[in-house]
Length: 301
Image (cartoon, helix red, strand yellow):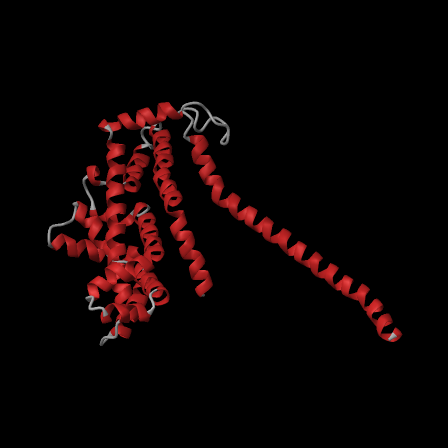
């Protein structure tokens, strides 16, 4: 009994040392991880901070004052940007909202149909279709822009809104996400119960499957919206009329003119700052959906 007690007493310091050593190692790893995250955050946020500060400066002060010292010219820059060619900037913003909003919505609908069919139905060529979709995820959109231009040129749709909208409707990555989410979130028993009650496949999809796939479809919509909003190459190739430009191509045109008219640089920076605001608002509005989706995905993984 006494030997056991002595062993226990002698073992406590070693155990304490082990725990202390483990805690010290955990604290050290935590500090290193925090530093890495802080460096990564600074790397991502410094350009945004520069845009915010630079948008408050006039064209003359942009390259002659300290980079991160703000001035008071933001409102004047917004007014000048609004007056540029009769409000052309805001037309670019509306065009971008149209391309991103309609394109992302149609893409989410197509992804929902295709993902649900691939996850819940058995048909000939299903596996081959899925493999083709996986291959499509790996192909950069830039490579497809030129062939898409020639295809749309043959039917006379280049330099129209359709030239930007149509190529964005089918997203292999969105279909892939929808398939995974439909497979995990829609039980087969629910589908069988719907069929037993006499519901058609379309009604089962709309009334039973879509509500269960909601967070996943919001994530697909959000990814597509951000991707189309920031897309440059496809509208740059497809469009020739600057009244049809999205914000990315329009600001690029302004930037090129800045080499001869330096005052336009401040308008480009102010326009870039304003173009971020709709994306921030969209993330804040939809965050409760895609946060649920990410959490559910983590649990299912």
